[in-house]
Structure formats: structure tokens, C-alpha cells
Length: 280
Image 1 (tube, rainbow, N blue to C red):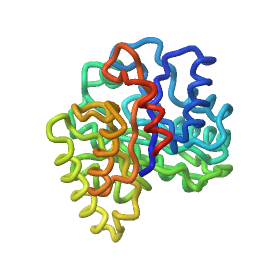
Image 2 (image 1 turned 90 degrees about the horizontal axis):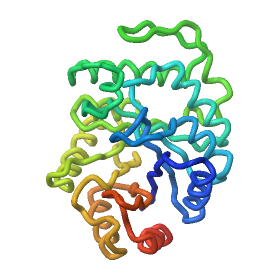
Image 3 (image 1 turned 45 degrees about the horizontal axis):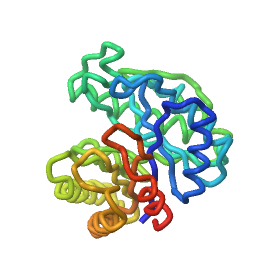
């Protein structure tokens, strides 16, 4: 089981730099940032792409990713350009976690006064993924869509990874089909009610979507985002081992836990957190 960590881009850079270096020392495979303008009212909340570029300069091995980038406020061409830059600075350690985004009162779409229906959000995401894939795999790339257009853009040259991998957070049938078509990995963020059963159902849907396009879902990394259900992932090492074993039997290959954040629902005993990291 590969273990990843979600970091909080809320501290001054000297503190964040040391946190990134410590995450690498602990042996985490990947470090992730939520890509938002703000999150749950917290300020400051530093830009994910600028933060990942800075993190790339103080680390050597840990992969760097967004969890997740959405079309809520990022458009395809600048997103692809930023991804190329981080890919180059990090010597090929970027993973683009991407998703359709939410519609909660604190979502970026709400901040930008966008009132999209679920269907409109899904439509935008599908076009966004298609264009982002083209921009990172073809040069020059031209596209004319309902929401975004571009002409003769050359971003793919110079990429270290050809292209940086997409790990797609897709839950419904449409999102799972996009993951099967474009994803090098899949991200599970199960609901609070019966998260284990929810994850199992979505994995079944992913397998069906992959089979429909001639892919074997078993070869795709599958990341479980923890920390939003009642499951006691960081209560103890034994609790972590039990949950990781159960989800591993379902087919989950990667797990993301949160860096302890005192005074919040993501607080945890630092000694337990570090032991879990070292064991994993």
C-alpha cells in the first residue's frame, strides 16, 4: 500500500518548506494540496500550483499533486502551462489530481458567482479534461469548445513526463467513464455513510467503465482520500493497519492521510502519525 499525505498551505513559506522536507523524510510517496482559492473560510490559503513549484525546489523524491484541480476557476491553457512548469522544476514528479469540483457554499464556483447545475458542471469538466489532455500530449494543439477555445498552443514540448499523469476523481457513471478514458489513476472520496460499501460500488463501476474501453482496471492506481468519514484512520497504528488491509482487499492501492492540524477534525497524535508513515 502506497501512503500519501495532504498538506495545508496555510503557513508562512519557511514553515511549509520544512513540512515538505519532513514529509519526504517520513517516506510518503506523494504530497498533495487542495486546489482552491480558499477552503472552508480559511485564510490565508496559498495557491496550489505556486506552492507545488516551491515544494519541488526543497524536495527530491516525493511526488507532488493537486487534490483536486477543477474547472471551477482554472481554464485549460494556463493550467497546462503551470503543469508543464512544475513538471520541469520537479524533474517529472507532478501528478495532476483532477475533478469536476463541488457546489458547496465554500466552493470556488460559488466564490466566483457561478451557479452551475450538476449537468453543467459535468459538461464543463468533460470538455476541460479533453482539452487539458490535448494540450499536454500534442503540439501545436488547437481546440474549439463550448466553454474554451485555443489555437496553435505548444505546451507539450519540454515536458519531462509525457504527459504528467491524470488521477481523476470521478464518482458517477460519467466521471468513471472519463477516468477510464483519460486517467492514469483514480481517486476515491467516499461519502460519510457506509464509505467502505460506497468505495466498493464505485470500484465496480470503474471496472465496468475500463472494460468498455478495453482497459484493465486492475492496472490503474486507486487513491483513497481519508479524513472525511468517521473511520479512525489516525487513532492508532492498529486502526490504520486494519482499515488499510480492508480497503486493500477491495483494490485500493494508495491511501492519503492528512498532516495533523491541531484544533480541527484533522488533529492527530504526531507520534502515531509518524509511526504510520514509517511503517507504510
